[in-house]
Structures are given as C-alpha cells and as structure tokens.
Length: 570
Image 1 (cartoon, rainbow, N blue to C red):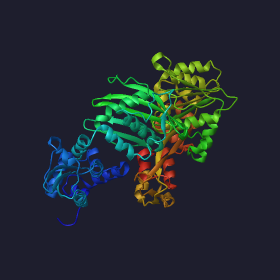
Image 2 (spheres, rainbow, N blue to C red):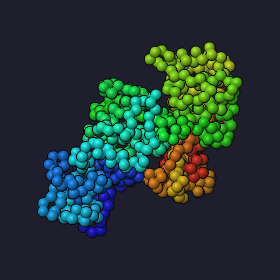
Image 3 (tube, rainbow, N blue to C red):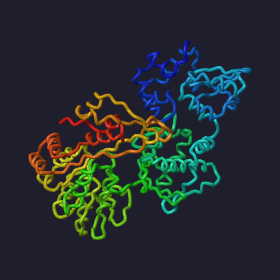
Image 4 (cartoon, rainbow, N blue to C red):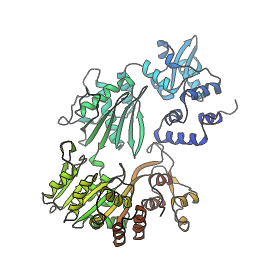
C-alpha cells in the first residue's frame, strides 16, 4: 500500500472530502480537542456510515454494525474502558488466541501492536463507526455511577473546592452515600472546572444517542466531556435542584439562579435556563463571576483618544450615552466600568436591569419584571421621582422606553443605556425607526460606542506570522501603510490555549461623538452610511480600523479581525 497515509490523506484521496474540508476539520480539532473523525462528523463534512465503509474498503477490513451485534461480556474485561475511550476502540469477540477489536480509525497501525502486547492476543481489526463504539462503551462498561467516577477523576482536583451556599441552594454533602453521590460530585466538578477555565457559559445537552457538556471559553464553545447518556436526567435534576427549579416540570422552559461558594471563600453566581428538547432538557448556565469583572475604564482597552472622549461624555451633567453591540460583545463590562467611575458619594445613581448581573455597592440596582408590568419604562418613571443624577437603563427595546429615557437625558440627567445594533451609525437610525424624532436624538445623544470582543494571541506560544499583503489590503489596510504591518504575531498552539493559538479576549471600540456636522446629518434623517461617513470625517475610528490597530500591535490575528468586524465601504 506504499507509505503510511494519515486519515485525512486517505479521505481526500478517496474523494470523500476536499482539502478545504480537511483544513476546516483540523482547525475544529485544534480548537475543541478530540479526534479528527469526531470533528469531520460533528461539522457535517462527512456521512459517518459512508466514512466507515470507505475506511473498511481502503484497508481491506470488514465493517461491523455494533448497534446490532451481540458482544461477549467476557471479552469486555480484556481491554479497559479508559483505553477504549482514549482510542475509540471496542473489543468484540474472541476465538482461541485471536481477539477481534472494532476500530473507528484503522490508520492507527501502532495501536494494533500495543493491544497485542497488552492482551497477549493476536488482534483482528474490524471497522465500526465512532458513534456505535461510543454507544457500546457506555452500554457495556459498568453503571453510570462508575462512568461518572471516571469522568470526575479526569478533571484534575475538580471537586476539591466547591460547596453550595445553604441560603441559596439545596446542598447535599459530597461524602454522603447512595447512588446519587457521584452525580453530585460530578456536577460540582463541572461547575468548578468552568470557573477555573473562565468559561462564560456551560451547555448541558441531551441528544438521541449521546449526552455532552460544553463550555464557552473566549466566546467559543468547546466540548469538555460526554457523560453516559443514562446519567442525563440525574445531572439535569441536580442542576435544577441547585437552581430551585421544579424537577417534575419537563414540558416548559424554566429559569433560575444559584450561588456556588468555593472553599477559599470565593463566590460565583449562576443564571440557569432549562429548555425542553425532543431528547430531554437542555440546561445552559451563565457564570456571573464578579472576580472576573474589570470595572476600570483604563482596563477596557480603548485607544487613548477614545478613552478621553468616553470619559468626557459620561461626566457631562446631562445627555445620553449609548453602548451598542451584539450579545457577548462586552457591553456589560463597559457599562459597569462607567458606573464605577460615576459612583461618587455625592451622586444618586440608579439602574434598571434585566437581570441584575453584578451587585455594585453604592448604586441603587433594580430588577425589572415585565410579567407584572414593571418594565424598563416604568422603572425610569419611578427613578425620575427619586431625585437622580445618573440613570442606567439595561436596554432600550421599544419606543416607550426610548421616549422616557430621552426625556430624562434632556432634562438634567445623565442616562447610559444599550442597544443591539451593528455599529454606531446604525444605532441612530434604529432610534429614529423606533419612532423618536430625529431632532430629539440629535440634541440629547452625547456619544455612541460600538464594540466587539476579539480573541488575542496566546502569549505562551507566540510566534511571528506572515500575512500576504493582498490579504491586508482586503481587510482595509492602505497600501502606503503596509510597512507598518511587518511584526504580526500568531499563536502556534499549546496546552494553555487548547491548541488554538488564542487565549483571552480584548475589546475593540468605535466611539462616535456627535459633532455639529453629524447632528445636522441626523436632522436630515440621513442614511446610516451617510452618518458613518460624516462621523469618520469628524475623526471617528471604525471598528475595523480599531481592530487593525490591534493586529498591527501583534495582539490579535487576521482571522479574528475578519470574523468580528466588517469592512468600511464608505
């Protein structure tokens, strides 16, 4: 068969995937860990059955349907569960000194020799799909409790620190007996590891033939583990108990909160959302870790001129400052940093939030509740009767809220709020589309800040990056400035960044101050493109320009700039 080929090379040669598909799968593998086959199937780049048939044909090996095969229980003992899971293999049958083992990837020739030494048997290889091998491992290797115990041990020291605060959650001591104890320890483990990994969310997801847990780290979902499928209900119920939710209600969505206290005294809040799916309840937990909240304007990452404009705007005696961007773009951090700057002993500062994510001492924080009629607009009206200097509105979602907020901003109050728009200019147009008069928006708005979060180059595996000039030009770098982009960096991938070359995130900003020309353009109900052109002429750096500055300084990559910002076609 000639030189040994890798799995990817085989699939390309057999025309099951293209080279671009292979690179996509390899990037996913580097980002999420695991095996190439897993990435190919998860991304939908190959059909798993067809993949198995191709591998069997290429290596001249029989293909086995493990779903319908009766496995000899005595054979299971010959290879440990850990070896099977690590290599995605499964012992099938034994005849004399021959042991038949199902491989999901028969290109691993050295594994066959290792198994022969380990089992003192002649290894006969058959090919089976990865999903069928995973199902067989879960079915035949002990109870869910035993499997959960092995998962706990795979998370280093994972359950050492976590305990629940009795006043906020139901708590059962980790050392108690009974069948549920491993589940309790496992849930503690995933909560603790998520905190240590600085994850923003935990996704607990049931599917037809598997059950997985993913963390969102630096804005990207990463699969952490696949607990036994028959443990899904127990894990979900444990999370619902902690969040004070009704475990018997599985037909409707539920929302709750819980608090976890580590043994070092650190406390982390979790927002919990349960959603019924066709294969069970999916649970998403949002981590609200106050220790990770940076409320320092200097730490936001604004350019010096942007920071000066922002600080001047929030310190005005009245006006509207708007922070805009998609979910997960860092708006909460920016707003809380502004509030911390304004939180002085001689100031009355009130916020209307949905929900209140972090508690800030000295600020009157209010949780709105639309189900009982306590909306953002109603909260604003109440604030105006409370002698405020500064008001924060979590989000301007409708005309009623916009009208009350702009009335406050026009009558001696500083108002800070957010909208979900793509850039600063689009924010102005959105307010006018809601029904606000253009002159009201122009006169009361002091500043609009758009922002995005970009992953930054891992400092542990940093290396020089070569980027073709034509790529930089396409991103918007003027040809006469290409000489400034000679020291670009990338991460080569290491354990700290999970092989991605990226670790941590930084914010890029578009700070649009409303000068006279821009106000005049708003009076004329100009298009977002015209507003953007006018703002640029008044000195605004766009999101793309700010991102390119980060790229030039070696803080992020070309891919992050291209994915998170749009070109300035003005």
